[in-house]
Length: 397
Ligand SMILES: Cc1ncc(COP(=O)(O)O)c(C=O)c1O
Image (cartoon, rainbow, N blue to C red):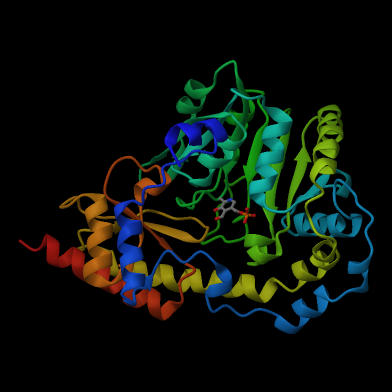
């Protein structure tokens, strides 16, 4: 099809660069040649050899309730009550009336962008962070404006960069806590300072329960912010390690009159899509209940993998780990003997280890690689040892 025809048919926002980058090409070649590699980017928990309460999960999906349909734009009350219970375990009281179900956290973002922003408006996002924001923003015709997370041995929000990023068109500030991939939680004083701008705060808390250390300075949720509308997002994808179930939620907090108005508008948005299936809503209380063993296994694996990583990348290694407080990722700073892309390509081609480059998450200075803590322990240890050996070979005088 000619490119002029493509322009006639398709929107500008659905256009993207279809060329594969060097890493994607190298992976495609390895698949063609049936070459095995260690995937240290694994993010699909269902492929991570984790324990699941299989029988109980299957049983919870086999309910007769699946045969009737009584749509509710916010989702079934029984599901929302179970989610309120989940918040209570995190020390947060939220009424089921302030909760809304969505099919995924990504859909929750798209609902909130519809609720808060018009095409052309701005939303602030942390940088580095999760690459999907770019697509979510393009599809809603909004503009992203980054604010910085700065690193000085620990990550923190550069509050001046938040103030600088705000424009008269700014409709929301996104906070990811803990953030992907930095693993940093938002601290209470940072949240207070962000709330002072009086702009709605969207908190992505999908990894909240995957903490690698305790810290009293953390905010438990953006719902703790005072005087401003807040939206806390999470879902089964990370909480229960079941992305295939397609169930997530938005908890709305803030001044009561604003919460009421937000819920009224969200009701219409939800009613337009009604996207969460009845069988999953029926099963959700059980799925949450049966997620404990999987969650504990992920936490145990993350601790074990972090211990291996700390051992390998301590001095005298020329590489080091960035401090991670939680989440499913750890970032390694590599000596800039070669570019970040060359590191990722050579680790893949020569050592058979796949890692994410830091620039995938908008880390601007080089060279960083991001590794998934979800990787099964044996593969993680082998893959990280190969990286450590490559670092030591390359940095040898
Ligand atoms: C920070 C963050 N938010 C949201 C998601 C996606 O969640 P969902 O599967 O519910 O759309 C991810 C997935 O990796 C993530 O890292």
